[in-house]
Image 1: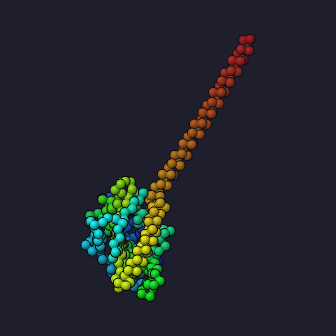
Image 2 (image 1 turned 180 degrees about the vertical axis):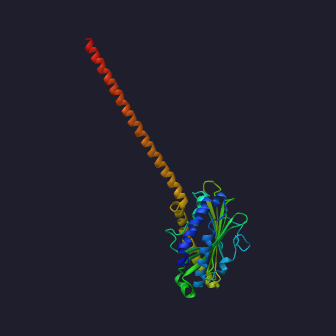
Image 3 (image 1 turned 120 degrees about the vertical axis):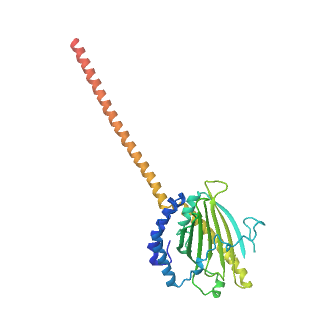
Length: 87
Length: 227
């Protein structure tokens, strides 16, 4: 998949290959040491440079929501189950 | 705000589904997904994997909404995820960070082992749609985002299914190839062994035949001399 920065494409490809191999072959089998850290650092720096250049503000992206009380909640919990649409 | 939720099953193991989720783009149904990047990723102290992705997708607005919005032609989306390899759950929380005053779509997906069949996996989805626009606009915007969500939803399911069936992880592909190669090699060796045995058998038979022949000839000559 393309990166937001054309110049980060190769770094992303290398990192993705490393990550996918590690995730399927090691992480899911209990090995939690990430061997792709160096590749990730290079790729991540490239993406950040591009985001700044393009003026895309990603400050909001870093706000952690998942696993916190900021997550939206099911408004009809307990009342109704799946496939319900509430206006 | 509109809220809805659903549950669906996948005829794949959780491990297959978890690996495919990272490799679902690009696929023939993801033309609306422009870019995908990982902004943050780390293994947490409890061993879970946290990732933060930034995606950009095309943003075709309904014609009536074009005069209301004068921003980028794409929408920026953030996907947080936590993988728990112990309980085997993969949770994603996705929200748009651009255009969110106009319309916001938040989706939470929990991928886990199917409750009815441990060989399968299931997804539990919750979706929240909202808009901060005035009341006259809020309703048509929500109607629009609902239909947009539904059509993208079909593409997302087809794309994931595609990743699961066509886009096997390279390592898995490699393993399958090794298995096939090994099988081919074993078959080749067997054929060689069989042909060697056959050649040996033929030559032995030939030898036996010759022996019998010479014995018969000897007997014949002995008989002749006796006679």
